[in-house]
Amino acid sequence: MIRSTTGAPAQSNSFKIMALTSAVLAFAVMNGTMFNVAIPDIAEDFNLQPSQVSWVITSFTTLFAIGTLIYGKLADLYSIRTLYTISLLLFSAGSFIGFLSPNFETLIAARALQAMGAAAVPPLSFLVPLRFFPDSKGKLFGFLASTIAFSSGIGPIIGGTVGSLLDWRYIFLLSTASILAIPFFRKWFPAESAKHGKIDYSGALYVGTAVTSLLFAITSTSLTAFLLFAVFLFVLIRHSAKTTDPFIDPRMLKIKPYSVTLSVSYLGNVIVYGLIFLLPIMLRDLYDLSMMQIGWVLFPGAIASGLIGRWVGTVIGKRGGRPIVNYGLLLISAGALLISCFAASGPSLIAFGLFLAYLGFPLIQSGSADLVASHLSERQSGVGMGLFNLMSFLAGAFSSAVFGTVLESGHDSIRLNPLVLTSDATIYSNIFFTFTIIGLVAFAFFHRFYPTPTAKTRPASAKR
Image (cartoon, rainbow, N blue to C red; front, side, top):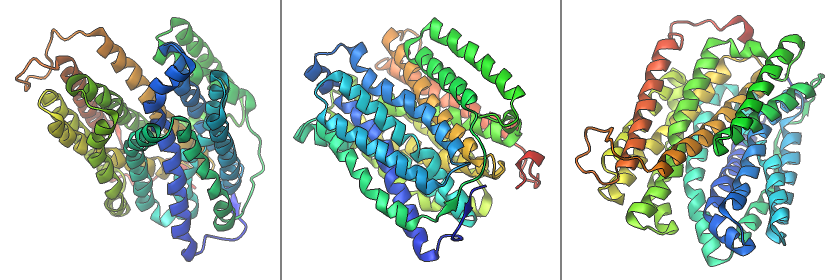
């Protein structure tokens, strides 16, 4: 483990460290959702086709996904303070270049540079409580998860407001403010001595290629990309089995509580990110709401998820992450069911269903993070949290691609939800009912395969 050369952070600095961590995390999360509302304007300014302008999102998300895992691994070797400094410099530089971009090629390069910096933020943010405040990690995980949920909901409102009043380029300019956090990271975060070790660069290359291929296979339904993913996954497995210190330690995936939690968190995020992706489309299609009006439908749930963090952390501190994950799965399932039932009944009822689902989001994130951290060794914590964040992102990519394709197909001859009394909005109702089923399957899977609470001992590979 990386050791602090100055001891644990002083109590007076603990609030500052977590406030700073949360603020930077909010910037990184909002950066993803803010640009979704700017896509039409960017396409118009540069005279782009939909397939071309989609690279504004794809270029960012692809590198972001890979980077979350790589930074997690780097955090096992280098200090969090140093990695934050480098990542924020990259993110701010990309944001400023994006603001000035004279053409589409420069814009894509700027988004890629943004992603290379922003990718560090989620894994490092969840490592801060684990490394510096282990006695309060449950409470702090809840705080960070609420920050993610709130930021993902508020992002479209901020992006829509800035883009409407000024121009889409000013969304980039807003993100450059993150560079102001660097002096505070240098001042408040403990100095840490780097651990001696090496990075499995070949393994990192195989992981990056496999993840990139999988993302393209999901988003473009490309058979070639899927075959490439299968090939590099096989190569990665063979390489990891022969390497003494692989980029991803296969033994980590054999820790049953960790792998079960990873799977359940993935399914929960399929629902959450599917809701975030599909609801704006549905509200525009059925009710012809403006982007600003859509943002305000999302806003109550985002606010509630931001306020629930303290309670979530208290429960985790007393009872652990297991019951929190259960509550979260039930809440998002109930929210998806309500939206399925009332898809054609008006935005207010939809907002209530989303309110419940948003409450479940920080519960799943924080509860899962606590369980993941509890079953990994200090040596595994960085890459383990990186993989946890990577799986969350892949869930979003999978959900958007698959259910977006279902929506485009227009097949609504079968009504899946027996509680729906009207045939209006059948395809939307079916998709959200499918989310309900996924949530209940995840809940049953978690109950069946996660070790019972009476098992007090940790796996041998996870002992500290």
